[in-house]
Length: 340
Ligand SMILES: C[S@@+](CC[C@H](N)C(=O)[O-])C[C@H]1O[C@@H](n2cnc3c(N)ncnc32)[C@H](O)[C@@H]1O
Picture 1: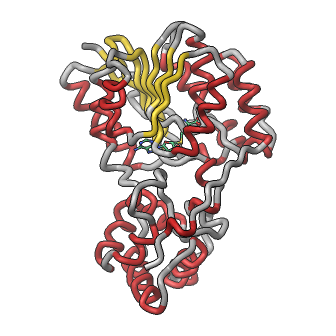
Picture 2: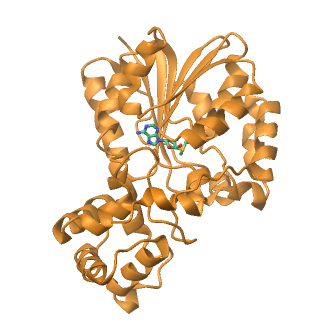
Picture 3: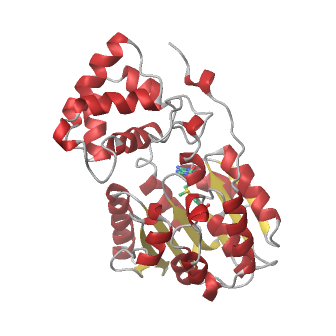
């Protein structure tokens, strides 16, 4: 069996668009941030833009000197803007599973005055990270779920169906199970269940059946091959949709490879133990299953008197943001405050 690691190359890439954006973020005060979104050029919108940044900053209620836990640091888009507000006396604890993103984030954050403690970890282990850093509580917590444009746009990471690359999809490239193993070794029933539950794909049975038939001929090794097999399975008349017909299956496989939903409730609950009374938690999700977990976890903690829910309904990006950054389209932001 060919290991996906053989295919992997680390790509260190920073577009000039995102450099300009981050320079801008560093120089921009909170009340000017919506304008920055409005004026982003097409080149900038293709690079990494932090989603619902203005809303996140408004709802986190940050004060100078605050200690903030960013559980999905990514390229530090949100964190750099947070750093501007909390200033030299503030501290950002940043967690990400992806070593490459963490290194980029470190570079961006170096130009700010805050103290930074960045760790490569799964956010399900955030309690260990905080203990290792000496414990203590935090004033605000951010989860911005899913993957970043940095990961999505790199063909070698195998997340995208737009460009060909090895079938990988691991956020943490040190972890063992990649999309290659999953697609080429799970049973038809297991594949069908993943595609149905995590992709909400109506053709899940057909796609799983064709995947199993095709991999008997030869293993499915690349994103292009996977995309072509999925297209074979979907009836012709359903192939011309707004989104690429393989999108839901790709999303499902990515969620399964990274066990994205499994860790979420645990991580949210663990994080609340470190949040000060009066401190805020913001969670951005991009998938209805994720949002349901966030909603339920907030509801349970609100019934227990631990949280007050600030956003009764999830907040959505403004039309202007969606126009400038189409990837923000499915974002939902939920906010809560620790009460005891
Ligand atoms: C949407 S991006 C975050 C972007 C970031 N807020 C920014 O503005 O640059 C999500 C990030 O979360 C990371 N991630 C997803 N699930 C994770 C997990 N379970 N533990 C740690 N990091 C995770 C991904 O690797 C990715 O870098």
